[in-house]
Image (cartoon, rainbow, N blue to C red; front, side, top):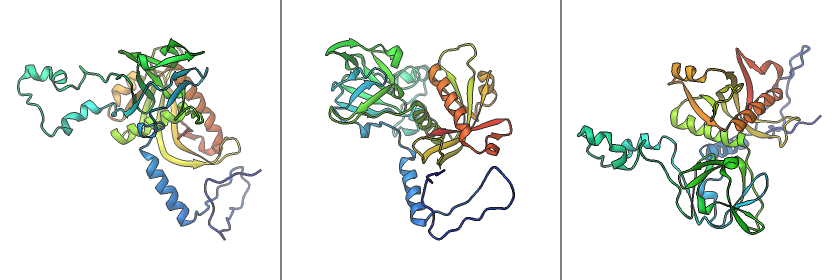
Amino acid sequence: MTVKLPAPVRAGHTPSVAPGSTTTLSLRLPVPDEVAKSMLSSNEEHEASFPWSASSMAPKTQVACRFCQALLVREQVQTWKDLPSENWAEMMDFWHCHKPDTKDSRVHKQDGVRKGYGAANSIRPISTVGLIDITSLLLMQQDCKVIVNEDPITLKVRSLGVAVDTGARIYKWNIRLRSNSCAAWEEHSAQKLISAQLLAMIESQGIQKFVLRGQTEEENIGALLIWIFTPNMYISSTSAPQSPKRVMKVFYKIVQYPDKLLEEQSLKIDELQLPNEVLQALHSDVKSSTQLLPVPARKFQDWDVGLLER
């Protein structure tokens, strides 16, 4: 059996094995200094990045359905822009160099409308402009078509995302992209995109526990409580394809009453809503990843331990 290590081992090092009969072998292998520095630098560069940001998109980028390969965006979108974080409206008061006068209580009540942000406002798609956040694309309806035998058919957004005012929010895990008609198609898993979303929430809110729940209430579907324990690590396994791979180590459990948990620990736990089928697939993937860990490392108190792809 051969296992490809995540990094080369320092030359001349001879690992020592503790005596005794055990089914688990633990070794600490030193990495050359230059390799360690290179890995650290690479990690910092990719820490705040996410798949398919605006900087990586070209004006002729094509978007297709991941499952049936129908073309959704040929060359209608000329410009791609990154959307702000979800709590952008809450932070606007801190970013103002000249804050509006809100002494009048009546003005204060309508402040979100007058200033152009807040609960009364929402970001809307723009013609020929693709708006991008960590897990989705926001497109105008006329810019997002299914091309079948050169005949345009309006996109059925229910299967690929959700309908929004004058447009569609398409989840990245349902699509594939290429920069032009001659380039190779690229895809990203839901697991990788959700990991990027969780890392962004950690960075912006300083919380490492999250309730992942379905967008619609269904029986027998509990919420998934995840605790991001180690945000960045590399693993190699004969059972894991494409080893070595970058992952997060997480503790997880199923909770049946997420609203009560969120109410009791509102400052310690945040919430992320996902399509029900994506939540079920994520739980299955995390549960399967537990088998990649040594038996003694698969449980922590009443938590199960698993891995999320990065």
